[in-house]
Length: 180
Image 1 (tube, rainbow, N blue to C red):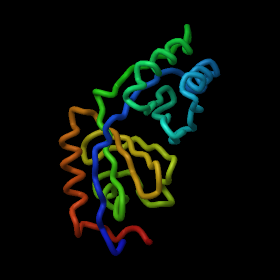
Image 2 (tube, helix red, strand yellow):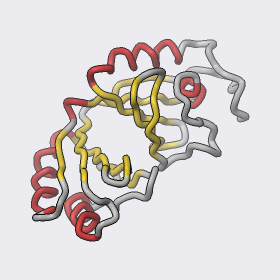
Image 3 (cartoon, rainbow, N blue to C red):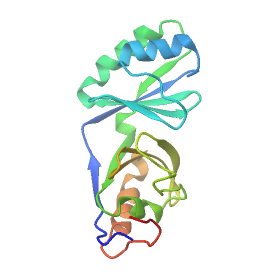
């Protein structure tokens, strides 16, 4: 266990989220997404990003685009135009989801207590995206950096998730599962 168990939990605000549905292996879809967002469609369980945006693989026919909230309308218009007649959809889900970040010493341990997803460094690394659950609610986890883990949940369960994270992050609650 880390000598210090002090994970910090914070809601991430100002983040726009667009769900993209379509065959993520079809050239017309991947080309449209890349031309409209500047990001390549990630491999399964991966996330691609630049300084402002990230594109997460969610399933064989779903990706989630994270961008500044102020850009959502413009990005939706660019995606709609790029998709043209292709069998694909894009929808602003920014108001239907919440994002939280767990960071600092003990971040992995904090989440290991409440998710069945493996949190050990050799099993979950920066650039990976994983759909799972926290206790009894659906969530997706990704690591933008080694000491930061972000998670997305539905807005309808956000207070439950926030409370769950707060209890799991309590001082003295570290686990003896990860070597430093």
